[in-house]
Length: 217
Image (cartoon, rainbow, N blue to C red):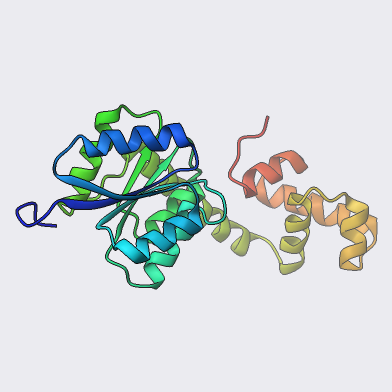
């Protein structure tokens, strides 16, 4: 992406027409970039990426047909040179981790100032990833907690107890857990008592919060 040879080709995709126009105007105002195409849905974006081979694609995380993550996955599978920046109003920790694993180059919140998009594109064009530290650190911390939780469950509980925990975390009552596992309701209650003791939790709510890395209300 040498700025001395040609403008950096950029594709923009978002399913909100006004936002898409605003994005185009912002990017087009910088002479380093050439907006080669825009798209309002994932399928169109994928076709345009294949046709134009832009250096950078700014993709809305939530779009009809194919999401930004779907497109990031497809681009990776096709060994495309296009560097992806995800644009989103909201992104979960799991989505952040998946995006990182898929090689995303940038994540930008829609609430950011317009110049943040241009700054992000400059960084990505120069070969630098632009990832919000607070969002990435939160997601990485969640993954660490998940790993620690999985190790705790594996080392502390029996196979049967882990089966019961999985069903309890799906919100199934003891009677249904018993039926699914071929146990009596009394046996399930005994197992739950042992699980609570081993994991130092008081009830189903606390157990579910522990397993799902949530804070009980």
